Amino acid sequence: MTKKCFKCGKCCDSYMGMVPKTKDDDLSPEFLNKMEFNEISKYLDNHSELMGHPCKWLLKVENGLFKCTVYKNRSSDCRNYPEGEGDCRVGKFCSEQNKTPKAELLAQNNGAEHSLGQNKESQHGS
Picture (cartoon, rainbow, N blue to C red):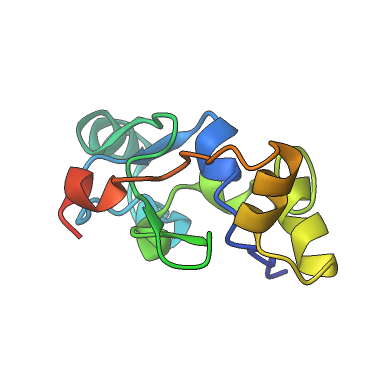
């Protein structure tokens, strides 16, 4: 089942999961399932880290939307984030109301700027 991403970035600011240390580190199940169990453990020790808040791989694109710069190599933690639940409700609500997450967050905060994902480009060289 393919989950719909609302590109609000909320999961990448509130979720606790493992992420790749570098853009080349692959944490996808397709890659990891080709290894023996002891190889997976060693690989994860050297190629993954705990997600920061917001995640260092979150990139602000436009209109208050965000994208994951390691989407193809993201971990099962990120792949299994429950669509439309928890903080993802902000993205789902905005999508249903045909609003951008940034516009909704600004409305909720009486115009206060939401800093999620700002300056991410400089942190990971995108």
